[in-house]
Length: 418
Image (cartoon, rainbow, N blue to C red; front, side):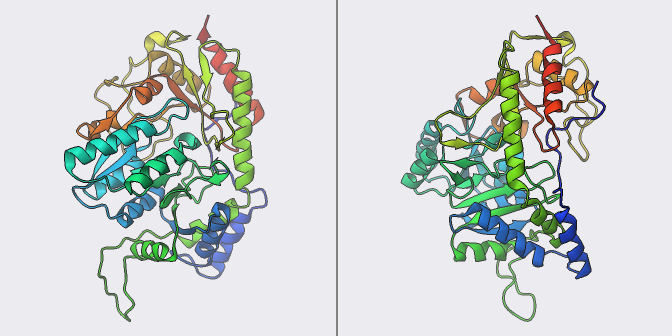
């Protein structure tokens, strides 16, 4: 039994303690409100990291970044926005905030990300059915894996639809050497407590021209006009990052490359140590030199015929509380099962690892299978649903040691029968 709990991706501060240095400076100078030197410095650090002459606006959450990007693309009630189905709800919920409708696109097998062929099929079909083009396209870097952005951009440019890259899980991932979030019109980043780097809570929006950057900045600060009093000519939002949180971010930027390197190292260990385990497959990036995933979380799939200890008891007990690090108030489930859930062996392995003090989690449930989106248009091929039934996320963060990975792998092996 492990003497500590091994989490999926726990926040890890710099050994030099620079986060505390920047936070102390904020307190010493009384800059403890949104905006301030740390916010400005963090944005400059992000712009240097991203390159491509991009500008960055630091915000209170990645969800806020997605919301503002949609507004900047002109999304209004009654519009449609194309978004990857295999993702977390923060990719699609901001669309509904604006009264628009998400149009979900299924995945292709090698990256688990948006299928470009289905994307083009959906664009053509929505134009035929509604008489207008979708207002934006939102691909997602699932678990840090780069999407086929060159193909997606080619389609988007041909139909003149802006792309909002959801790189919330993909900070530090690259495609053909270029940082994710810098290909499209906008790029969304997240610095939540479990991401590649953290600001406790927070996010950022990557934008291009000075004009775009200024407009986003206006929307993020309540769209206040230049008068000696508060005058508002558009509806804005209180979305700017705190100077305290940005201080954490400045310290984290000094170790971001170390964090990315560690996640890649853990991924290689899983690939090596699970290579001989029948029926267990580590999901890896395509081996053609184009992909450079940060492997935010490492993922595996279990074949349906793999037998796991305790499998006969899977889904026999109704879950009463939050599972997998969820916070806040949740509803107690009324049933132990739904019409779309992981296979019994995946759930049994999750429970077994939990008992061994290892946090493991099912992969994201596709948005087109979520009850809240039951009426949304969806263009599916079965890929994401199949992966959801077989997939599982394993710990990969900077706090996960080599010994932890070995213990996780041995725990997986110990619970497989035969």
